[in-house]
Length: 311
Ligand code: G3H
Ligand code: 13P
Ligand code: ZN
Image (cartoon, rainbow, N blue to C red; front, side, top):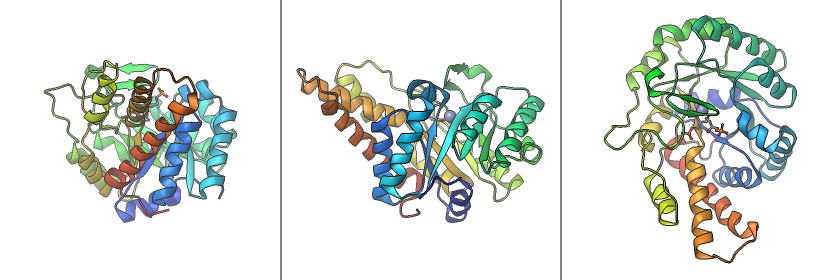
């Protein structure tokens, strides 16, 4: 099956009360782990590539890895640019075979965000590619940018209709309590999602797909495992998985998860090397890493997204 856009996936997800997982890919083992889990669960899938991943692996390699995954799985898969910072990177991905791009103008003044997002949406739509925009800012780590907690703010429901209407975006990423990276809520802080804001947004944008970034829950057992095999990571929780599941039953149709996969993968590599200190064959330590990704994606499909059996 060729790559698909997210249009059909989101329609079904909205009506079915579930969300599609958007997982970040950087190399072969990550692509394989994610797609094997999706295949096992018969789940639709979004593979997303950040500008950093594109710099690391190159556009050509990532395209070929995704092509291989399509042949192996025969699942509906969308290939999405995550956090496109400017028109040029979006254009390059649209011209280069992606079926979906995000233009992240969330750090810009409102009118500038609209202008940039509309320019990308016009270019993308002429070529059959869908576009995600963002309104509101998440705190935490985002590519090279570090948005301080002080500057972070929730999405203003009064702006969403105007933004979607004037830009023509196909989905909207909002800020209602999630944040990027593995250092989210510190001990003592209560992780919570602002369901009241989500509901207000849903009322103003009926039947419109909403996206949540920063949706890794930072599961303590993986941080513990990393630390028990020589790591030194502070504990900082994310939004609990059951809260995200509730959001997926509402208008949230795309949930972005990267850090939980990185934690699972790193824990597996650390454990393997600690238990096999003379091992120097990358296949030996990347195999459990790939399996850890597969297990984590299966967990997310079943506990957070609810998209198993929906391919
Ligand atoms: O939201 C950002 C994603 O986790 C990608 O991270 O920019 O380190 O590839 P990256
Ligand atoms: P996490 O860091 O919470 O996994 O978020 C990933 C993300 O939003 C990618 O765009
Ligand atoms: Zn993100």
